[in-house]
Image (cartoon, rainbow, N blue to C red; front, side, top):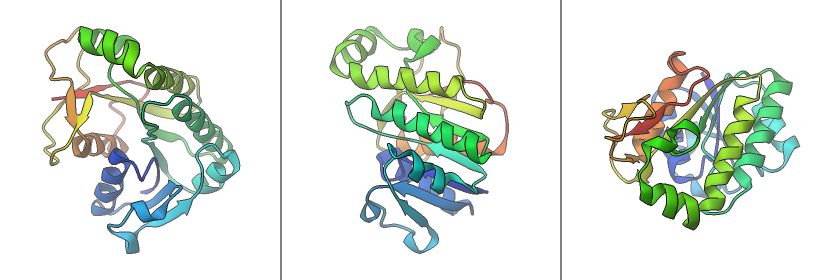
Length: 207
């Protein structure tokens, strides 16, 4: 497939880029700094731009089969939601339908999956702006006319791709480890290109 990745220079986005190229996809990476992607550069089309620039986003998306969104903004709020809204508007305008968007475990009905530390200390206080940004991001996606999947991973950790993780578990499930490697997040997101099991759904992802 011909896919474009937003957040391609982030910790998850880089993994998506590398794995997508390994799988033979034609990959476009959208970002502000091409120097942050050093591997497989000869196989990759890099489009320099700002996610908050609607015209740049629309121009980049046109002609692709699917969009993968892994926008990161640290603990700041606003960038994910606004950037995702620009992506959605561009997709609806250009006729690109398939969107796979990375959010976080703890949003929506997955709030019951997380423990008190994450609910009240992390999302309730320390990184609340980032959490609320994901909440708004998901609302934009769900209100769109796209064929969307929202992936809700646990806390990111380093590690090799295992392909051995839990996904789509019940909101009442409290037995997960609440963590997942960035490589396995990328693995799961790319697998959504191959089927519609989680079409219009919000699968959690964790070990």
